[in-house]
Length: 160
Ligand SMILES: NC(=O)c1ccc[n+]([C@@H]2O[C@H](COP(=O)([O-])OP(=O)(O)OC[C@H]3O[C@@H](n4cnc5c(N)ncnc54)[C@H](OP(=O)(O)O)[C@@H]3O)[C@@H](O)[C@H]2O)c1
Image 1: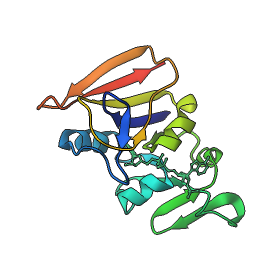
Image 2: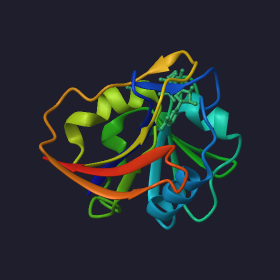
Image 3: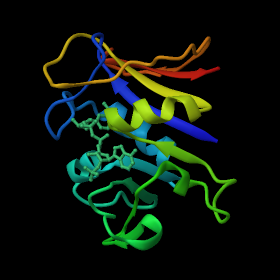
Image 4: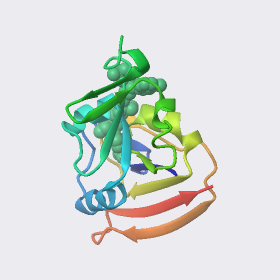
């Protein structure tokens, strides 16, 4: 199953430079709950903003710059698995495994069409930043998974 996981404010804002526009501890816990033990995949810029691979997860990174000149388009380095094409996620070894796509904007835009499920954190209010993402497909089924205790965000599961 391919799950795409993101948080956005009421304008579709998701990022501010190499950081998140907000720091909401319940959203970090929610993210950890749904990604621990999973394969996660992200863009090179998001990987750089994390700084190091997230523990107890297999960390795939889409990057053309990091895989330039590498035969087969896969480079393992410092706990990251850099790949130059989305198709490389589905190798014979892992095609039945779950993947969670964790950003950023370029990678969400590429992966929405392949995703079975969206885990969306609706961040209430308007924040400052420079990176936006909005869903393009219809996601008619919407289930509320929970809420931040201080009312800062709501956790949703969307399916087709
Ligand atoms: N709110 C959230 O839930 C959330 C989650 C994650 C990130 N973010 C935010 O999003 C922002 C980063 O997003 P972004 O869109 O700027 O960057 P990004 O999607 O994280 O990474 C973009 C990079 O991915 C690689 N890439 C893109 N398309 C590719 C393809 N078809 N094949 C192979 N590699 C490809 C390229 O790397 P190369 O240049 O190396 O070739 C590109 O520069 C940050 O502000 C971050 O904090 C927010």
